[in-house]
Image (cartoon, rainbow, N blue to C red; front, side, top):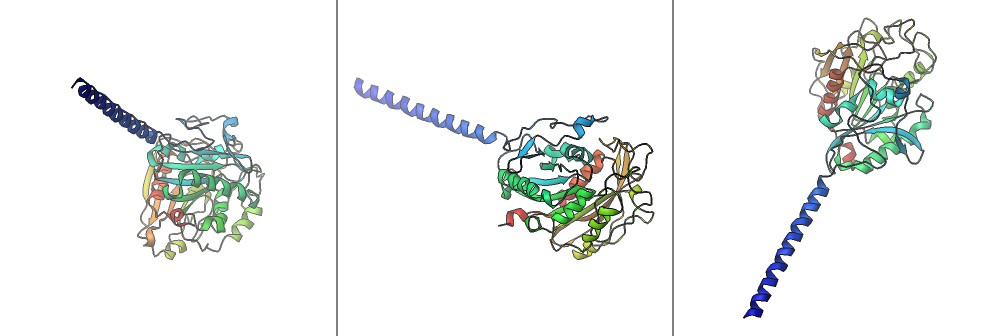
Length: 357
């Protein structure tokens, strides 16, 4: 009888230990699943690495090319994402290209969507051209960055993939979206003073840097030649948002119609929604302020923007124009207009990557 009781007690303790072990294993597995995702070769900090202060960002920081190494070309770039990103979480991926004569970290703060990674679940790659102007020589580097991010996040977890580019970076986005690698992946193109699909506005007579040093930044030369080569609409299917400073264009303003909107059977352009910013942007072209040229851009200041949307586009596409009132080419975007652009992007149809082979 005593032996039987001993065996019974032993069995009870064995079962209790097994239950405790299972509970511990479940807790450990649950804890592992709750750990945030870290993309290889990156760190994630709040605020993001090399973030500028609200004003007077030092030049060494503005020109930084980024801490993340693209392993095949050995060139660096910035990769911003939510520090609490979970494996399997759905995100929007944006490749953001700087303009001619500019730098990766300047672009991060000209279009400061890095401030909205956590709120709107964004993954943003911001590369840097060593020559300070994009060309086909950079395509392998850009493709490798995109391939890396897709591999880390998983294409099934990328709700939408957008190209965003300022000035010559916008024109480069227009070129890329026609290329075999990108045309079946890109859900949208945000042009930040980088050309408008469906009909461009005229340039202000004073547009251009006061002391033009780069043909890519000037209204003539290579800029005009590249623009002419991209006049025909691309065959790819994607949403398009065009943002421009009011002082960059002539008095006729942005055309009220858009051939790109017609392509998606959108309705007539809406009346403007006004976005008001009481806070200034981060950056501007501090090297060309003597003499200043309002069309090129003045120091950051609060402002207003008008958002025009072509409604009810087929297939869930978004076509919109955004005019920043009394702003020039190089004044960094203010926070509210930046977030308004993000919300427009998020409202558009995505999912091309999930369908890509």
